Image (cartoon, rainbow, N blue to C red):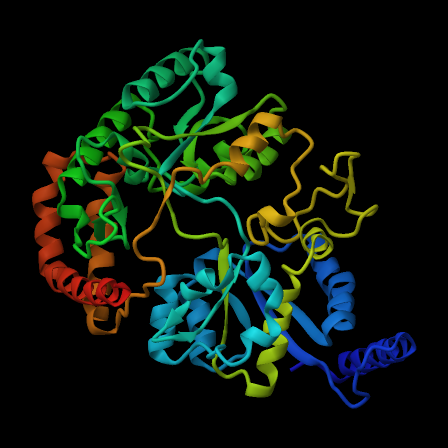
Length: 497
């Protein structure tokens, strides 16, 4: 609970807001106390964000929707588990991000509040700006709504792309990256010119960046880490064990070659923070791509190297293996279950407010105009204060998109037309209930970390590691897990008919 002094300040500001509202004819009840809302964000809070959250943001939210907002930060290591789950299980009141896997787990355990009866009245802006009811359907379990979709951006092929330094690609005389051979040629030429640069860096090796290049008719879509399906078969509910597939074998063989070539650094698993640091210092060629990350990453890199240009590449043929989109949202917000019914509307109003207008998105992302940023004549952002406020990916919405001053017409057009030709992911609206196989899942995660991650990263060859790894996978219960996933996913697909 907040202390008495803060309550007095809040009451004073609420009284001032009431007087202003009455003057302007806005109907506000004199005895209506603010709803106290704690918003949990992840990462590191900058000095400016701490000041902004406690002052300008807090006061404006209070004035606008009568919510007394407090923002707390947790490390990303505590997301979807760790301290977040401990706070949920202990009954703390807050709102924070979720994803479909964690949502299913939390709903099964009774950790999330049911928002079905409050969202329509209090989330009209989210409905209008974040993809409509279809986006909300992703966050329903048995017809009940447990999270609010947030953001709206083209995201086809998220994590199925390779992002590379386009400026260096052109510097060494190349134009495009379409094949595995192209990537290897680029590395060879760039490594000769810049021998100290890393290859793959932030995020390490993701086998799905190779999906389009697999010698396979299947457009592999991983439903979770262990189960995959064919994205090109929209009506089929068939799933299979990804780590036992031929596509995974091909991914391991390519990764091992890349590891031996030096494209994947030797410390990719043991020192991921160093890989991140090298990337952010503009000292790496590749990372895992997504349409919107061009803006996030290039904005960081040009501070270290003003000539750095990032571009997404799809290794394969999008005509035969189209990119897949999960829908429009950037993330979703769930409310902890102990929030009282009469408080829920305030929580929903807060999330709705942050996607209600260009003015609010600008305020949340960039701060106070004239203090933290200015706008160019064509509406592009020119930062004054370089401290990060809210991470740019969070409220990213194409309806309110502002591009950095360095963005070219080609980059903007590419982003705005990114989803053309994509197909929807097959699990939109599906939430897997882990409860029947929670023991197996925990065991599988341990096996994955110890036995499969070294093969995925190319450190251990497929021939050297697979036999032991798949035995451990079987012992951990992969067959039971896949069987349960198949049962639930089949029922989901049949329910769509």
